[in-house]
Image 1 (cartoon, rainbow, N blue to C red):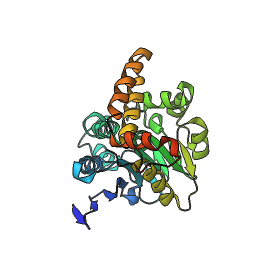
Image 2: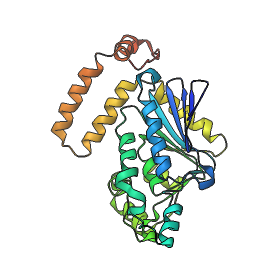
Image 3: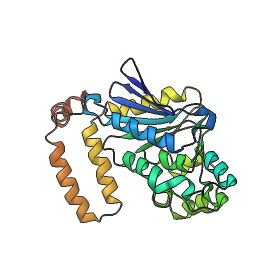
Image 4: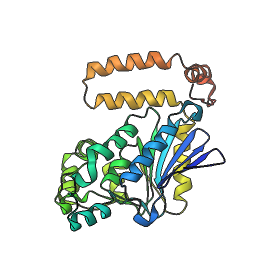
Length: 274
């Protein structure tokens, strides 16, 4: 890997940039439409190791793609060639549990806000990667698909858990069992994405949205993220208890103290993430 100006690290297939409090992780294999192979999964894991270093002071992460795609899914070409040559079996579309799921788990477990800037197509694990985000911004021309049935394969990337909870059971089955392409306006209507921005200037627009998160009260945002995640499998009384504990933790932060002091003044506090 090479370091550029101390703020950008280029790996073979991804790039991580630190823009003040914001980390920007870019899938950087446009010739393959940012298809995710084992090498890219490992590069993403390496980049995430940089994101969580305290000296980076990274308070939010934007994930996006270089070129015209967010991600075309798992990169099957090398494995396809090996299967045709008879030298190996195609295990689980590229080792979901050994390579790809651990990478996705690391993103889901981040305590900082994660924003996906879906600049183009997001297929299979590409959609799974987008849904690791707390807020999904899509370009007007972006589209989404889960084509596992076309490969005679069961889904991966947590999509059988994520999609029903995000868009409902029937729409999830529609995507997974019919492999329908879902365009950005439909995705917004279904609740699959948080907002849609014009194609022109999309990269800057997505970064501006992500920077709003990065400059916010990110400790409180992290608590909100955690509480919602726990609420997916918990029950109401557990939520009461979790919220009470989280309120106590945030009450001790500098951001909370500053916001309370300025509450009646209509002045927007400058949050530091402390």
